[in-house]
Image (cartoon, rainbow, N blue to C red; front, side):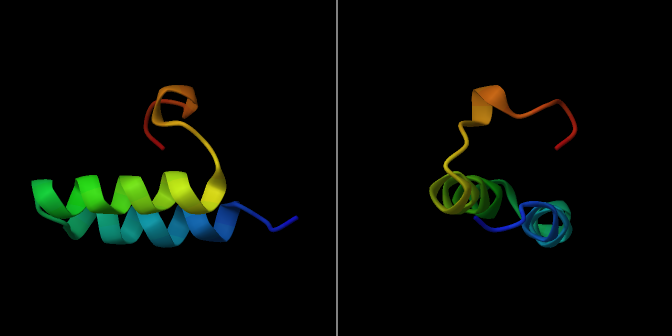
Amino acid sequence: MFERRPIYRETAKEYQKASKKEKMEILDYFVRITGLKIETMPPGS
């Protein structure tokens, strides 16, 4: 099992700089690699 925190941090950095379209792509990628659903993520993640 991999540690999710480094993935959270890296994704958050990219997400903050991204356009709206890029944000959706980043979220899709994040969901695929972590197995989480967007609905289950805490606010501000």
